Length: 369
Image 1 (tube, rainbow, N blue to C red):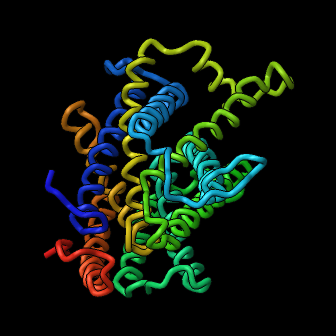
Image 2 (cartoon, rainbow, N blue to C red):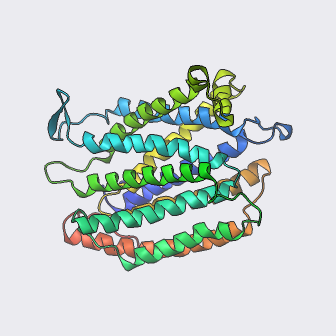
């Protein structure tokens, strides 16, 4: 891989390649492990695969964080909290981790609702795009963000929403009534609220760095992932033991307990497959927090890359395992994505020129040609 400096277009492309690669692998493995046993696939239930793949993803994140020492810092100011001196950013990074702990299971639960996977993905991706734009507007008003959102970024938002919303045009009458389902709206509300705080916190950290307290997204990621893991355990354990402790039963809880108490035959390979999703988390966070870019731009790059990777996973699975090829709406979405990318490329050229002029990037950083 070519060398690239922090904050450069080259580094951004590297992150996108990594995100695309591991997201595509994740998309293929989900289709493979949950494919029908009659067709030669493992035939895991969605819940079974998600339990073990989530464990594998979280495990690889923690292993890398501790092996690389990303959870350690010597540059952040310390404050005393409950008699212990901790880095001051812990006050908002730890809550960001708790938000991540909410985002992960609510993402899973969105896919388990009686709606198509594509519709669930549309709702979640569109939400993140809107949240990212709103965060920029709020932080500009607060005086935290001193960059403007280029018109090309706003146009990119429009085409990205068109790309995501194309799927909704093909929803058949009589499909699941999402809006009037209290459970569905609670799950979506929790997802949006948690992601809103998380994206705000990421950009607060990025936009408040100083010459003394430099930008370090690896440290942010490390602390956030540790907090997220603790948070997920704090959510999962009470749910798992709820039937025994409180006599509370629910179909989804029973599926979750069954996946743990009676693991499927392929559970070790499901954990291994989940490591790809763990690597997705690295690149996802690094793109969201990319140096010198607005939340609007970073959120668009993140979501558009995942949309393209989803289409690539569908094509790859069709070629290798005989699955279905992308539908008409997928190709229409891809066209809108390419238009959005074209506008983002223009915005990236302008942003790099701006960062070079303000010496936030060195002269070796180049915009795309």
